[in-house]
Image 1 (cartoon, rainbow, N blue to C red):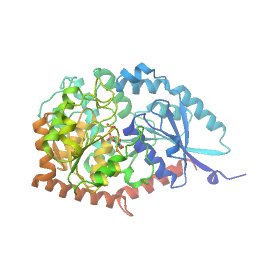
Image 2: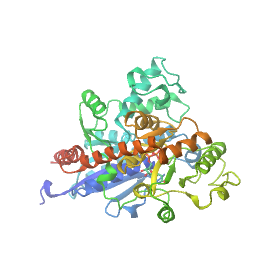
Image 3: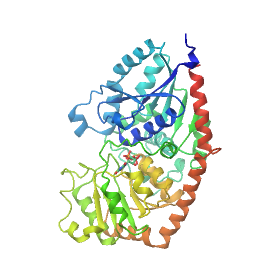
Image 4: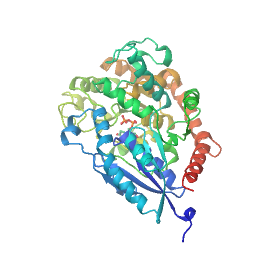
Length: 453
Ligand code: UDP
């Protein structure tokens, strides 16, 4: 009979069903697959990844119980909580089946997104080791936990604040940078945070961040944690780039448009990411701000992201004629490729954690305008701590025009480009042989191997 050590070591991955969570989980799977693990991705039907993009993985859909109404109108936090209660039973059935088949395969562990805590609970009940993947910054995790404590003590208004006053416990964050969610129900959000950052049963945490970027924050977290933390970011740079996990079809025609633009002249605008939305008035401010900047722009407008329309029907009259070929609008861009393009001189981003890391990794300075949640924390680090981006206070055409021109044309933008180039180099060092993420990844692989011996 085969010895246990010779059997296939099997990792079961559970991403949270949103683009910003699916990408890093599948990147992690690709990396661990290259170390010899077999990978199964257990996923919801809602926002299910396309198995064809990762032919070397197995994909197992489980019922998420979300109705069309939940998907169209439900709030993010409610849907995540619902997925956690609705998926538990089907995941348990699946895991029991795999365990019963153990002669063929040994489960090394379950790796679940920090927000998919049901998977950790099932693994724990069935005595299967589990590891958490954190897909946001370390600073966000502290900010979220602290936010709940501040609310409990009545120190913050549960609806948020626009104040620029520093929150002493969270230097350098101001009240306006606190990671409030889109949800109007703060109690539910606090419950989600307690589940994600409270006491967990997993054996370790994998973090899509880098030691040098968040050193003191990671040390603070490790000091309070009983389990090992493996900062192995940026995952997208370690994983081979040829596997896309986009839920929306990427419009590749924007690359040939970029090919025709001057060096470092284009502002790439993806100011919403995969979740946030805009009003018609906000759309008009962005449109005229970009038009008046006179700089070429590549603007991602996600289908359904402008309230009251399917796509770009509500763009202001005269806008497209006024910009002509100077503007290119895409439903969804191959973002990583866009950021490596020599014509791109800046990125106006909502500062989702993946976008932030992707921009730094390519040395592209940012205009930050966060919408909600962790984006606010990331934006503060971008503009104030790492000083690689300009903060946009208002979605107002004059401010947008000035910010674009400053970033692409002025000395201030040039200085940011120099600083972000230094960070880019450090990213490269982190993932090279002997670098902190390289070493952490090897330690993680040994750690996982020991879990199943
Ligand atoms: N993305 C993309 N094309 C686009 C816009 C975004 O491929 O047109 C990708 C982007 O590269 C990133 C992810 O979608 O990996 C968005 O994640 P992020 O954490 O930045 O933001 P979220 O969508 O979670 O708010």
